[in-house]
Amino acid sequence: MCRNIKKLRRHEVEPTDEELRDAALQFVRKISGYHQPSRANEEAFDSALVEIADASRRMFDRLVIRV
Image (cartoon, rainbow, N blue to C red; front, side):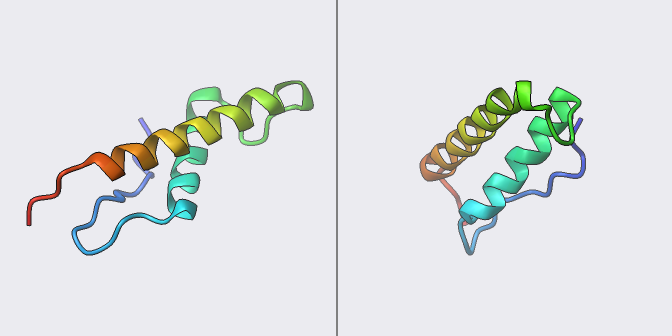
């Protein structure tokens, strides 16, 4: 699934909030089947986007990177 989402884990730099949001957007689009949700589904779509981006940031903040 989502093969086009690029790997954001890099040794030299943490992913930016924009990179995390873009990856979350690709993921939400893929699993929902919507490129752009209808007005009726916009709140659920946007909420999922924020939650996934936030969860991704928390994960990167907690990862132990071995160099």
